[in-house]
Length: 270
Image (cartoon, rainbow, N blue to C red; front, top):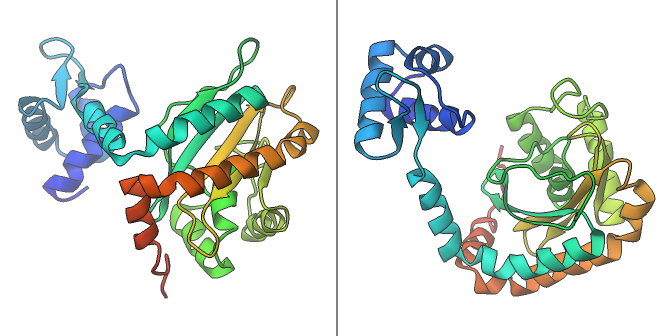
């Protein structure tokens, strides 16, 4: 990695994936940074309150300062205020995990959730991660609202999620991804069977006003033994209705209004 800013962000992103912390040598080696340079950057980050050492000469971990910035931003964006009641309602009806992801440029990021499962198997991933567009129900729902050229440009940029990295049924070719996109367009919602995570099925619908760009996606996910394909299709009307209510209420969110204006231009231009 080259450049102070790129290296600094790389350290933050790496530590975000390792909650228990990493030692200096590991951070430097994984990011291909000289250890002396990594030490200077970590010292600056610690001085500014973004990282700390578990003990003297020990591992480096993130503090809650970065988290608080993100939560503060979401709080002022109006996303959670609008989304949570609708997510809670859909989670209660489905009995599974319901999530909202938002379109931010060329990324689709999960930002809010509601858990409907009260007992038994529960799928409860961390928020803040980006969806792999080629094999997630949320990704396919967004891509289905774009042209094939725009969709494939985003998939190419991010890369196709292979079955060895994601679920055993993840589409491994461009044609397989296109088939999933076209099927989602035909139905108006996506259905995936163990494409993103082994043992997990999911469905999703785009959040958008008529003739406007997609601003987010609502998904429902649950274990394959309980969240069957038949159950997903039975919930389709409820999912689509919730996505419609979310779109109608999105005007109250500063983030969604900015996202809608930003999406007025094509996402991909050759």
